Figure 1 (spheres, rainbow, N blue to C red):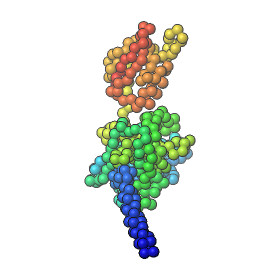
Figure 2 (figure 1 turned 30 degrees about the vertical axis):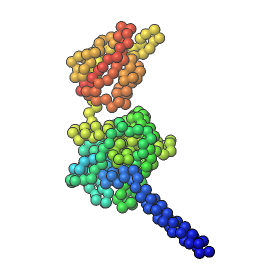
Figure 3 (figure 1 turned 135 degrees about the vertical axis):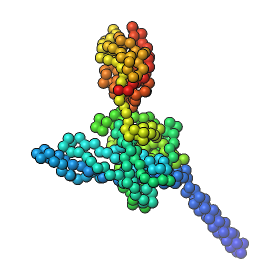
Figure 4 (figure 1 turned 180 degrees about the horizontal axis):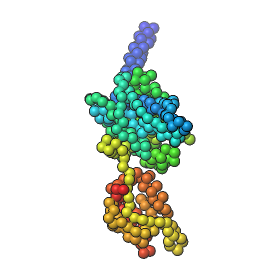
Amino acid sequence: MKNKISLILLCLVIGCNNSQETNFTVSESKATAITAAIESASPGVVSIYRNQEVTQINRWTGRLKPIKPIQSSGSGFIISEDGYVLTNAHNIVTEISNPSLSTTNIKIDVALPGGDHYVASIVGVDSRSDVALLKIEGEDFYYCELGDSDQAIVGEWVVALGNPKSLFAAANYQPIASAGIISAINADFGIDANTKRLMNNMIQTDASLNPGNSGGPLVDTNGKVLAINTFVRNDSENLGFAIPINYAKKIAEELKLKGFIDRRFSFGINATSYRYGDNGEIGLYINSVDYDNSGDNKALYKGDIIIGIEGYQIQSYDQLQLVLANNDARPGDMIKLRIQRENEIKVVNLVLGKS
């Protein structure tokens, strides 16, 4: 009997010890790559609150009448210790199609983790790329480290951080996190017909995105920003899309220098739709070439027929413009043209000039 009691006590002691070891292991396992990424990036994530005054023109008196202002919230992230903030353009400016309405006096309030608020100035807004750059006054701000979106791979873990549903303030001014994977890269949706927003080469994620996440960072497990969370598809469930940070960084740099993005370019050619070949294919017949143009079009000649650009078949000048718009072409960019010259197909380069 004594031996049985001793055996039972020994088992209880061993069981308690194993329980303590298990609890200790579970406690230690709470620190993961995801929690480390959140801890690393969160101090640079901000909430953005916009107040945009709207006025209406009285068609009888011509006077402006204030109406209810546009108020919204979104997300952003600090990208430098001197207070530059990256976010979505649609968080900053709302385009109004009604010609009798106008917007003025956009006021931006930026809330940092911990609850400090700053009035932000608008450095530049680019609606085409949906990128905006803000500036808050101060120094030694925590900021998010930017990664390399060209190295993003399908299946890697990512975390979306931001202010969905204005929960940033409700959570003691800490960014809200949701985790998932990159489910696709280079997702293309062309140019939105309503907003004219370019939605090509997007990073797709199944990390949950909600209204207010727009403008916030999508970070990898190292806490580095891979993309800017931008939109969700209404016809899908739990699929979000983000602007690759390498592209957004280029836009931000140009906004910082100029305050706007210069997309005015010229070809230095005059061309019209033209039927060619035995099957009546349609291309662009070059009527004339201006070799004094600011671009480099010396590889083209009058009589050449442009049949493709950057791998896309084209039949009209409008299609050519659309392809370049989808590629966000700029002055100085080199584009590849597929042409027919004297029944021979050639590929030539054209460097776009300034308009």
